Length: 315
Image (cartoon, rainbow, N blue to C red; front, side, top):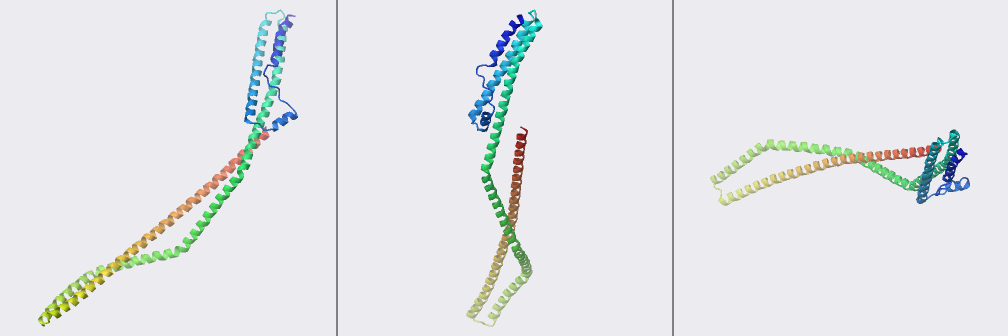
């Protein structure tokens, strides 16, 4: 009787804690559970469901703490009774009964949470798959545009290379002609420099002849008018000679300027060709890096999908 009276408060407390106020119902099973699992959830519904799981878990934790506390109190009170062992057994049975109910509800809550996590994971996977499928045409179009641009650049590069190869003999001939002109110019300049003393001697001899001619005219009694005319004719010849020399010097300077311009044009074309080659190599390298990056992204995406598939199979 004493043990029975002692166990009654524990049973009453366990029964009152078995259905706490505000506890969410156990997850439905059968067609209703399958239908709820297949229907998509909004963010607010998912948050509310997570809050419900939290509240229910807190209630179960509180019930567990209360059950343990009541069992400890019952144990303490049993030691003041006559039938101590019988009292402890009754208290332990009451504690285990409540513990079994809590365990049953805990298992049901865990099962609901697993179902909810699986549904959220499936929804995320479906969302990612739908997003990938929606973006697939855009990615394909972008890849096609990139491939077309790359092929166009390759064709243009091939045309430029063919044109350069076709112009290579002409460039070689131009370079050889320019070098030949340079050598000829150097020879002409050396010849002019070598002839400079002779020209100076010729000019000095001519002036001497002019003076001697004037003396001869004076000795032979040539009229001053005739001497002046002769002098004017000689001056004209000398002027024509100097003019021809000046024209020859100007033509030489003009040709030297033209040769310098041709040399500069040739060097500029060479520099442009070298820069174009560097640009083409840079574009080819960039295209190769982009293709490699695309391949790495595709491989990474495939690995992620395989990992997700393995995780789904494991669960």
